Image (cartoon, rainbow, N blue to C red; front, side, top):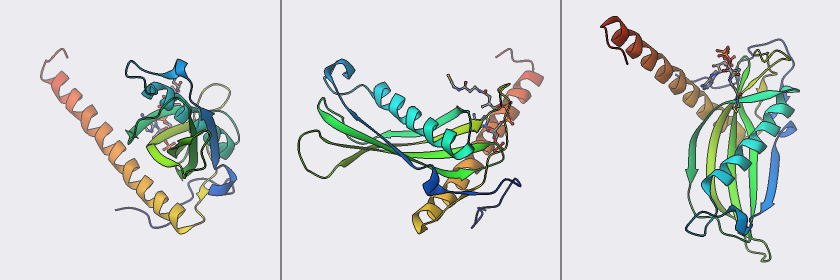
Length: 182
Ligand SMILES: CC(C)(COP(=O)(O)OP(=O)(O)OC[C@H]1O[C@@H](n2cnc3c(N)ncnc32)[C@H](O)[C@@H]1OP(=O)(O)O)[C@@H](O)C(=O)NCCC(=O)NCCS
């Protein structure tokens, strides 16, 4: 069961999605290729983490750390000379965590052709205080129908992440109780 609308988990005033939406653009160079001559996936993941971190920092108004990255999908290879745009927004907020959705688009740097989507990812960031402890974030206020759909989908992913973590923890505890060492 997912929420149909944002449910504030704090007294902090909400912030609209558009307030922290961010795009990072970068022209790919030969130093960023893998052995096949296309851009290394890790280079794209770094850009994804960078832009998601900017969104999380802007939304939460302070430092935020990557708690997890999931569903990183590479749809098409990225080539040297591609102008890559990495677009991110805050899809959902909990008490101290935020799901950031990222789309990766590529176009030839010197051609005016429409960009192609080459990847996407979802990251969870936790806002932290000066001691690295989680702190409360403003609830995100989805504005458009698309933002609202993304909020609802993020809630489904959150439910699955929690259920998976709980199931694995319970399995490990059961195995430890049965005497398994690992
Ligand atoms: C992320 C971190 C702050 C969580 O701290 P914690 O003491 O476990 O605190 P909590 O359990 O209260 O988790 C805080 C929030 O993060 C969420 N969270 C924690 N681990 C998570 C994970 N693996 N996946 C998704 N969400 C996660 C929790 O659900 C919680 O969300 P909520 O407050 O909105 O309900 C802590 O594990 C940490 O500092 N990790 C290292 C982060 C880092 O350095 N990243 C860069 C890697 S180089």
